[in-house]
Structures are given as structure tokens and as C-alpha cells.
Image (cartoon, rainbow, N blue to C red):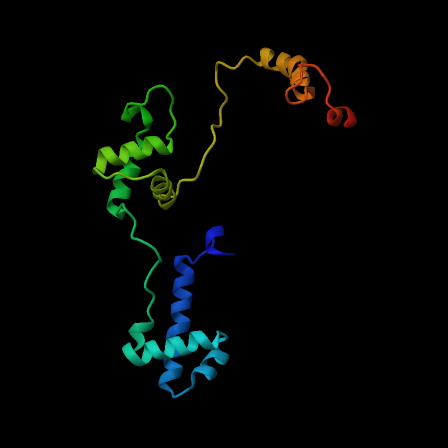
Length: 181
């Protein structure tokens, strides 16, 4: 999986890769060549040569993981803990009385209010992901739903809308919908 497809390396994989590099350092200290190390650890020779250069210049610590790639998060772990506490109070406590859902736009506004930091929607989404939240859909249907009216619309009006070709009068049958019958 490529990085743009949501792949990349998580913390566990970074630890595993660092252990492989530390094992390579032990082998280099024993006098093994980069090609031997690559074969023993089942890595590319290019990686083994790079590790050998880093090890020769800085020792075992030069092979330590540098952490996740990219910029540091805008919100610290302490700020995230405060944000989580605030989110658990609900949207009504933040002044959103019309509905009881946290949207990313509302979370952006809450972050700006709490921490005086301007963040984008993507940063808010990342903060929610770091807190363990996932995108949710409402479980309950609206109280105001008129089930008989919806059933009537589905039975009598939707077929007319579905059958009308783009730009054609309602109720006219398109060749593709006629062929499906």
C-alpha cells in the first residue's frame, strides 16, 4: 500500500524496523559486510549500505527511529486530553443547541476558542482520530419523520423521477429504464 492510499508506518512498525537496524549494527560490529547483513536480515543491499554508513558515522544511535514523518501535530497530548474532556460535555455545552452532533467545523471552532490556535478541517479530523473517535452517523431517525408521507412518495413519485430522462418531462420513460423492465 502506498502512503497516499492511507498506508505508511505506524508506531509498531517503526519499532520493528528499528530493531532490524539495531541487529544490523551488531552484525556490522562483528565485521560483516553490507551484502552479508542484507542477506541475513532480508533487506535490500541499498538499505544495508545506508545503515552501515550511518552506523560508521554515529554508532548504534544513528540507526534509531526518528519518529513519524511529517510535521509535529498542532495539538499536544495535554491539549488533546483537555479537548476530549470538553467534547464529552456535548455540543449543547458549547452553545450548539439546534442539534447534538459534533461536526468538524464545530470542533475547529472549539479548538480555536480553547487553545487560540487556528486549524483546518483536516487537522481537526486528525485530532479526533488521535483521540480514538471515528466518523459516525446518527443512530436514531428524526422524530419529525413522516413515515406515511415517505412511503407515499417512494410508491408514487419516485418511479416518475427515476424514469424521466435528463431534460425530459417527468413521467417519460428513458430507453435505458425501459430496457431494464
